[in-house]
Image (cartoon, rainbow, N blue to C red):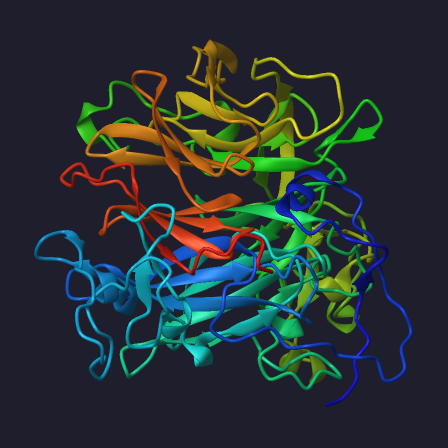
Length: 594
């Protein structure tokens, strides 16, 4: 195998997600190497420090439930030479232990010899698991089923990514071959934004494409290539690199622009990605990296991201029942998004928008510097309409030209035109940011302060802010005033939750809305009734729970247990007696086994 030079961390790395979530100061260095040891490939069909989850409905079963769960594995102890994104077949997993007729788990296995395929029975606690009988009762909680993950992960649907991958999100894409899903993963160890295209295949499964094996000097056929990683502004290696420690990502579609926002847990940058690419370029591109999380001379990092809903009267989720329009003034009539972002190491939330520049409507722009022979006395000033002799380039070469009015002012530049007179960068930029305090009580010692953000309602009148230390859920009134500006004021006392909460999802259960919060240190999921503004349940899950993903059709929540290398399945259904209880785990309970 060919040796390759890659960036590696300097010094020792804390092996738990406490460091992953809290500590800035990740250093990478490009070092020279000769016959560098490539290390050990990560194991196939195995979860290793799972950090991100995404339920994908590209392929569904007979009931319309998603067939696949994608899991980002962080390789947090650097035991292997890469992290991975693995594909769990949810249909096979559920069929191995769950009886849809009774809505309960299968009975204990009673025969000694398993049949061909997967037996629909459960081994007792501590019993051996096999490919035919992969599931058993959990020793400390026999009401919970735990299953060896290996029979449910497809070896040919695994790709290799950088170390310390974080959370997964997705965008809807389309090309000449049809519609597909693009899975996004911020990677911290090799600062990049990796994307993986998921397409349905003729055999009822999916294919994964991330330019595997496309890195120079790398013979690993599973590793995502350079064409599927964003690392430089406008995809130009001569421009700024992506900031360190990219962590959370929010994808938006507002007006005619599809954008992605990335918060970095250390440093001061927010990254803006144009999902449709730059003028004259191909593929998505980084277009802006402002120092949004910089205050009082300090780089304070970012974490939570949320988009405020925007819609005209009668066009929102409630249709004609909406009592009034919901159009923040910053959105320009809902033509651009309004985003809230939380600082990681300071008690502040900032709001902003993103928009680009455009040429004057109806302008017939011709750049006189590009076609000098076709113009007569055209000034090089950057503005105004002038009369010049111009024609089609082919006609110009033959001397046949006609005079017409052309716009010879500032123009949107392609990457190779940057630096020329009158050339403008027209891609979206972060604009109009302002900062608010979400309330709450904050300690004086250093450490993470805020976690995830989410809107509690479909109108965006209430913003939920997760306070990490001390653990609390803060409530901010973001309803619009008469001037079209959100009020941005704390609206109720903090709701006490667990210590060190990080991720949060809002679950709408037939109109009743809950905040589902992962508690890393406590190994709990907190359930907060958003109408009553109180905690209604706590769910014990695996060690080190972090990322969350909803399976809407099956009415369950998947929880990535990072330190246990498993995924918990939590029941959300109001029709089952096990509501807000853990049902099962993908992966056997072996805390800190990695």
